[in-house]
Image (cartoon, rainbow, N blue to C red):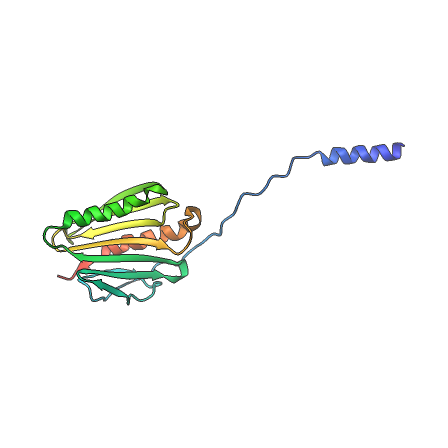
Length: 189
């Protein structure tokens, strides 16, 4: 009987360890190459530097006085949509309100919306960059204007279900590209 009891007690003592804990979810570590920029040559009244990893800007959509271009990042499944409008009949307030309302529509899913004022008096550029945190459809919204003739608004969208943790590295990378776009933009007239 001792031959049976001693091994059973030994097994019970060895088997009484810590309960197994599930491992936390892991995410891929995404790293992107250093950005290399090139000045665009597009038939619009402005130029800017764009990342060379984007597809060439070809799609210039026009609807009356509103023109738009898409800057696509195929490897990230993301697009920056730019819309250009000429300021007419003192409609700057209306254009600003529309751009700000578009950003505010993301408050339903956003954890936070941080606004960063952009101003460069020497280049006659004034604008705002909104960084949207959380599972919102767009992670960045922005606009630029010279307050007299030109108005540009932009939005960053991913072709994926919004999951802030998953797209965070790509979102941060593209925010740097948006900042470069805003800083390098030059009005042609």
